[in-house]
Length: 343
Image (cartoon, rainbow, N blue to C red; front, side, top):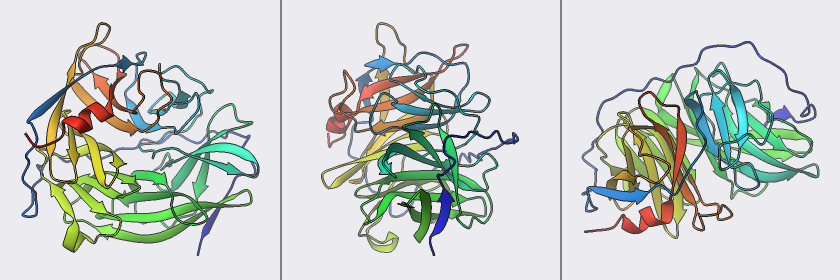
């Protein structure tokens, strides 16, 4: 049965008691007897087209908004939650929520209000939530979803839903079952959000990251990175790509009938891969006002075409450099996809 969460008090922000959250990043290498042969270049170099302002904290979550002046949802361990523009400058007041994960934003209209919904994880990691922003709100608010969670939620991902009546599809995994990706939909009934579980996918080893696209699921973990088409089962058509590490942050897009993923591995290296089994390490070319990351944190693909300089969308990467504040560096993702082909 669908579960309910109310939007009726959406103009009120309520502080919650702080609690420490942690994600366990295990650093064993991927690999499987099902792994495909890589025929892409060992590395791909891409110029840094844009970079945000710096921020003094590392991000605990990063998600992309589908439209409007708010381009990213930033979450910090101490500074809370904020929507920012392409420069990384706030376009909303900060919200007092803490999260270790957020999914891609989805735009919708609920009770006549234009809203953006970002699925996420509650402060204590015991609930699925939706961070909501839109008309009449000066800051994002957090709405709990009444899903039955066993253990703590370790990660979450989302995409626009193709299911009739649903707003978004989401998936998550937990501390008690790190090999299973639980899936569901979120819909609106009046001013209520309803969560409906739809099934699950079981992987051969533990999960550390996931992404949903219009064509299927991309999951990262101890097996490497795995592409699962919407109409495929894990047993017969799943594609495992044996990248050299564990993808601890992963984002994906679909182009035609193909899926492409960008990922930060446990050692801070960035790779891109496709469901044909090709993968390459991503190397950033320095720009006049920015340097290549020494290590990468979170990554996020966007298919937005309304950002100046990114007519085809972009890939954003959290850049870490010794002794310096964190920032995002952005590159044109279509240029990466075009290079991810056989030599």
